[in-house]
Length: 159
Image (cartoon, rainbow, N blue to C red):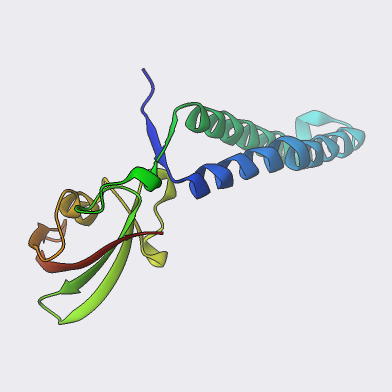
């Protein structure tokens, strides 16, 4: 059985848009490139043709990957979410107890993770360490570097 893909409704919409773009625009563009490359003649020494075929393979691979993710998607129901503890799809405002700084993380499925923008995966050490905890709790989370990060959960919200 394929792995369930946890997504917010926004994340599912982005995947569907990317899939549509690849199927309609990118496929046509690559077909045009292949036709042009074929017109150059001798395919055995035609780098444009080889490059276009490689690009086509990457696009088709991504289309298949997106279709599988969408097929196995579980959209998070945030309207009925339990706001008492951290779960996937929620934003968590934290106080880093070691540096006396506040941070905000949006806990998302691994498909939507974007750490540079505060979207961390539920499978990451910090994401996993926060799951199930409540406002006011202090949480110590070991990270891959060997350090332990100490947080206090200040607020749990939905996007």
